[in-house]
Structures are given as C-alpha cells and as structure tokens.
Amino acid sequence: MTKQTPVRNCGETMSPGESPRPFAHKIVSKALSRAPKPEIQLGLSSVGTPATRGSWVIVDLETTGLGAGAEITEIGAVRVRDGQLDDEFDTLVRPSRLIPPFITSLTGITPEMVRDAEPIAPALERFISWAGFEGDNPPVFVAHNAAFDVGFLRRAARVSSRPWPPMRVVDTLALARLALPHPLVRNHKLATVAAYFGIATTPRHRALRDARTTATVLLDFITLLAGAGATDVEDLVALSEMAPPHRPQAPTSVSPTGEASKGRGSSPGS
Image 1 (tube, rainbow, N blue to C red):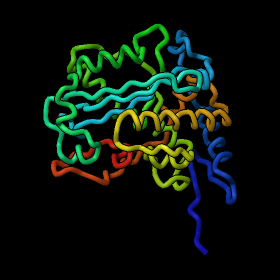
Image 2: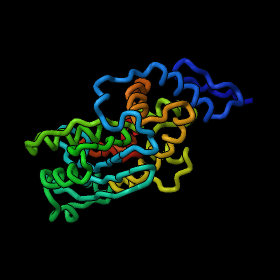
Image 3: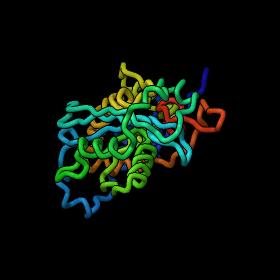
Image 4: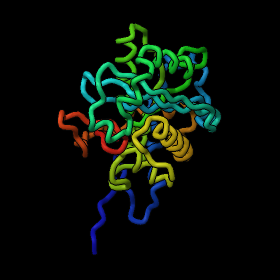
C-alpha cells in the first residue's frame, strides 16, 4: 500500500479522507485570525467592501528575461468589477534591445511584432490611466507572482521618470501557497492552480491570455476563501501578505544567457 504524504500548512494537518475545501477553510481561517487590520486602510473606499463587489485589475507581463536589464515586451490586463470581467487592456511594448530567440520561442513575440510598438513610457502611461490606479477609487492590483510584475512596472516607471502610484496588491501565487499546500497541488504555477479549479483556459505565455486565466483564478479564490470568513477586499490583501515563505524553484527552461521568462509555467514561483 502506498503511503500518502500528509498535507500540512499553518500548523494544521489534513485528516485522512478530509476533502481539500474544508481543509483550505481551516488553514485560511487560522491565518485570517492573525491578520492585522491596518489602520492606514481606514480611509480607503473599499474597506468593508465584499470581495465579490470589489474592483480588481489583474495584470500579466511578458519580458525579455528575468535579469536586471530585462524589459517589458507586453502588458496584458483584465478589469473585474462586481465579480464580472469588465474590460481588457493589451499592448505590445518596444524594448530598447532585441528580444532573445529563446524568449521568442517561449512567447511567440518576435522582434518584428514590437518594431512599431510604443516604447515603455507611453505604454505605461496608457496602462495606468486605463487601470485607474491614480483615480479616487483605485482598484486592487492582482497578479500571479505579483512581485515580478510590480517590480518590472516600478522599474519602468522609474526609467520613464514618472512616479509609481501607491496601491494594494493581491498575489494569487501567495493565496495558492496558503490555501493549496503541497501535495494538494504539485506546484503553484498558474497552469497548475488553474487546473485545480477546473479552468479550461490555460496559460500560453502571452500577457492578456494569462491575465484572463489569473482573473478566473482570483474569482475562484474569492469563492473558496469566503467559506473561511475571508469575505472582504482587505481580507484577501492581508492573506496575500501572510502566505508561507516561498522556496524558489529552478526554472525548467533557461536561455543560453542564463535568463528565463516568467512564463507562468516555467518560471520560479509560478
């Protein structure tokens, strides 16, 4: 008889025969009981807003690699309001250097495709304006492995000599590490989490398609976490910040220069 590996997270162990959803509720409830309610959020309009009624902008980027000199080649985003996909944004971006052949083979984005695209400064300006991050009721920024996307966008803003607006962030990778521990899922890549929720659309290494998948994953997490009492927008923000420490995984595909694309299916942490 094959011995099953026990599922543990947040000091809880999944009982033999226990279904995943009640176990997820248990560990999320425990984490939520420890989550602070930051006083700095008291002036925000969405405090106390049910997550199902929240405003979210789900973002995905394609880049020329992961290194310090890598640049954005595509910004894709989906806006979700009141639990419904409301609008989409997608633009190619012309980097200052050639896209490596390895990245082209992964994403399908060729140097010819971005030759007449906008450079990052106007593309970023259009994205921020579309998203409404500087408006009176800014949405929550959502991404899978959000540190990657926020890091690249912050760097792009700095290079473009424009301030990056303050915003709240929800990382679906962090939510997956918290609510879907190993070996409940074999890893926390976007494709794996999407498959767990039965989402037919899988990541394809293009920004808008992956943003759509992440948006559907977010909506599934909103439903799952509500059963544990995480019903408000700020609950998801707090839980996203409380995920277990990430153990980096080696990328499965690396270019001759040692760089890897985030790719959502082959990158560390995806």
